[in-house]
Amino acid sequence: MIRILLAEDQGMVRDALATLLDLEPDLEVVAQVSAGDQVVPVALGANPDIALLDIEMPGLDGLAAAAALRAALPACRVLILTTFGRPGYLRRAMESGASGFLVKDGPVGQLADAIRRVLRGERVINPALAAAALSAGPNPLSARERDVLAAAADGSTVTDIARQLHLSHGTIRNYLSSAIQKTGARNRVEATRTAHEHGWL
Amino acid sequence: MIRILLAEDQGMVRDALATLLDLEPDLEVVAQVSAGDQVVPVALGANPDIALLDIEMPGLDGLAAAAALRAALPACRVLILTTFGRPGYLRRAMESGASGFLVKDGPVGQLADAIRRVLRGERVINPALAAAALSAGPNPLSARERDVLAAAADGSTVTDIARQLHLSHGTIRNYLSSAIQKTGARNRVEATRTAHEHGWL
DNA sequence: CATGACATCTGACAGTTGTCACACGGAGTC
DNA sequence: GACTCCGTGTGACAACTGTCAGATGTCATG
Image 1: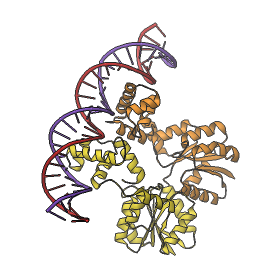
Image 2 (image 1 turned 90 degrees about the vertical axis):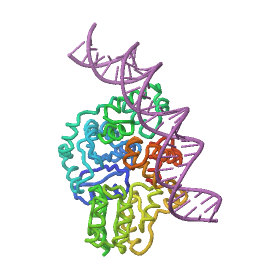
Image 3 (image 1 turned 180 degrees about the vertical axis):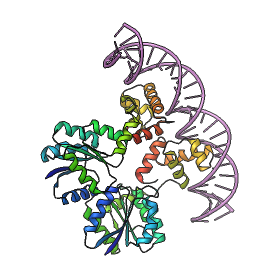
Image 4 (image 1 turned 45 degrees about the vertical axis):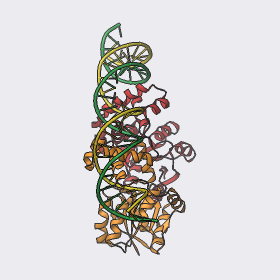
């Protein structure tokens, strides 16, 4: 019996996936959580063989939760399940120690299949996505540029961001400027968009 | 037998919901689509009793698809199914002739229940959401302000938007300015955010 | 130890954005 | 008919933004 922890914030989707996985004779959903920061505490109690983690979750995102889970429970495999097949997501997932990366696109059977393959020790990755992630190259943004761009995403002004990160006004403008150029954008809004699309944030 | 059309862009979610609904003895998913603009053509062939429409879909969004479906097939009820319980969405859903509005939050049983109730002629709406929609008041943005704000959302400059909408530079700035003030924001990015959060776009 | 990448800062310049006052015509309302 | 709201436009001003050249310091790598 494969013991599964399922982390997904949309209740109806979580419920539906759990029900269908439970219908499989060799699979058993032993825990369900709706936020990233519940993953580790619940996993410590339920001791699953594999954790299915959505990336877009409140609290901690699925990638950060994956890293925390690998540290806390190394025996538990991680399968990332996401709406968006962004190359940067895949890269970060692998760096966080995930064993598989599945886009919520195909049929449900694909999911059960991926779980079994991961438990046999295989790595499950969409080949097209892997190629895209490799050909896209690494994240061009420096750590600070990411911070600043992320802080700018909600419409904050330069002065807001400067206060928030304890940096000078001019420094923020410089980071934004270089982030804009590295993303090939014309302004911070476009830069934020393309960075998100590539999974660089 | 209740005949259902299911429109949802995430393949795995669509597949899971369809499978679970088909397990109910009185429900039957007769058609599945993954984009808003397929709803009407497929419905004309499948002749469903009710259409379950996700809002966030490529092509035509679920709300626009609902209006089109009501016009093309008045006998078919519409149940809107969405991730986001935004007051403006609910308002627009009702204006588009939907019979119900369900947030993808509760268990799957809620969905089957809602379908049966809609088919009995009831209107299914989350009471808390309905209260929020009523107390929030109507959309404060004029049609043109919405157009301009939507065009600005992707990082377009004033000049871009002016070309795109065939308006003068100054007019765009005026609309943006009033949209910013009506939303209580400090710039177009914040304005876009709050407008989205309220479902005004 | 020289080189380069990164983090941090300043000051200056040009361009964009947000605001305001004002104008005109059309549609709807009291 | 006066009033108001909407759509459209202009011109001006202040604030914000994006770019550039330069400066300093740290750290890793060859």
